[in-house]
Amino acid sequence: MEDKELLKQYMLFAGVNASQLAEEIEVSKQYILNLRNGQFKVSAIFAKKLEKVNKEAYDLIFGTSRDYDSIMDKIQQSELCQKLYAILEPISRGIETAPVIGNLVRFIDGLGTDKELTEKNESLVKENIALKTELENSENENTKLKAKLFDMSENLATYMMDNTELKKKVYELQKEINSIEESR
Image 1 (tube, rainbow, N blue to C red):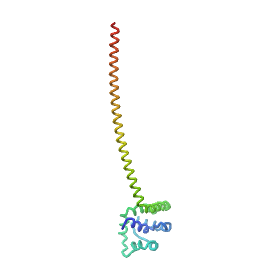
Image 2 (cartoon, rainbow, N blue to C red):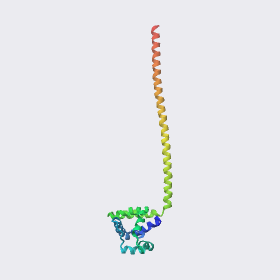
Image 3 (tube, rainbow, N blue to C red):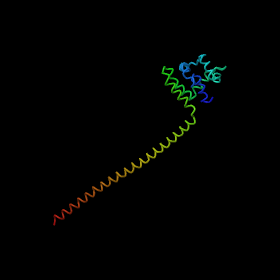
Image 4 (cartoon, rainbow, N blue to C red):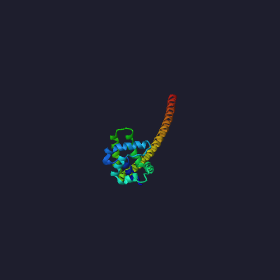
């Protein structure tokens, strides 16, 4: 089963339906508590609600085999379902449901934009590569500037040494000139 299709089933399973969110949230809460306790029980009332919502999902979940474990395995292997579970899980810890519903609605809204998200992701990757290249170029430029600065400081040191030598020579010449003048 495709990940997205499985997610739809899971959303129905967890009592989550965008149009019936408020009505179904209590069922979700119980479902998540059951998940946390490692149980897999769904109330008869919820089963009836689910049957009304999606006959195909009902058949899948409550069909003749009632193979809950394999469905749970599929759910646990689905990255999207895990994300959904992470959003819903705080409800089972008694956290206020309003922000959880907000997160859930944002999550569901985001599901229909795979192409858009992929393009955005690709754009971010390109931007990241460009920034990385820019950083590398900047580091290379920085290294070159450091080398220039080092050369300049070397030259300056050499110049200062040469200057000191010149001063010494000038001083020696001045002494010679002074001694010549004194001898006259």
